[in-house]
Length: 298
Image (cartoon, rainbow, N blue to C red; front, side, top):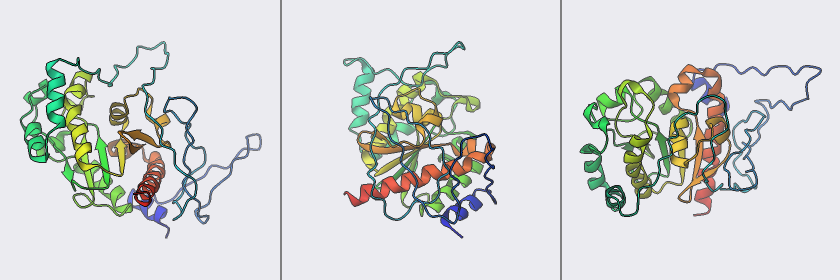
């Protein structure tokens, strides 16, 4: 059984169905499980915008050696698309004024070592989420890991246990990590953009992201991973400072402070949308290829 097949079986997908092309439709190449091809790397569009078209063909397990270089796409702010519907509030926080108290707070966080950072998160009262949390969720894992995963915010189970990605979504994430030879607490560090649970698991607010994001930035700087895998739309838009939909962020290698970033779906979303589990495997294949290339160039 191929590695892809074992991964899909672990995620609850026992068979894949490829729709037969219509006679009047353009002929598309069908990739068989028996054909070993490498996961394609999307080519960035011209200009500074970090949006790439999603690959049309299914992707199977990457080959051990690939000669094509992977471009790192510089992240640039992307204007929200024009729509007749009311625009959704942007999660991209505005930077603080240079001489403001927030700028001083961010500078202090940026200089913290692990013990001070952990204590600062546990005692943080910078936004209203501190009034409703049970536990602040700092993060878990190897603090010198080559892989880092970033999610959105703690949910109910995470708030109770003080650990990111527990419950059913956490079990699915552990299966995804296992397919890559990773394990929680061993060779990956897992964190969230927000360290406290929004009441009722509502979406994070821009002001909350602005207060909590400095903690994540410092965690990334301390871990110094070879690759970051971002889980879900809110985490991706916050980390990459963009309003681009997740469907257009997938399939492209982005960059955060020089570190390659791969975007995929949140495990909770995959529990509701089984058809996108195969696409999540494509994203993980891309992340593994990026990681391996980063190691080869180290």
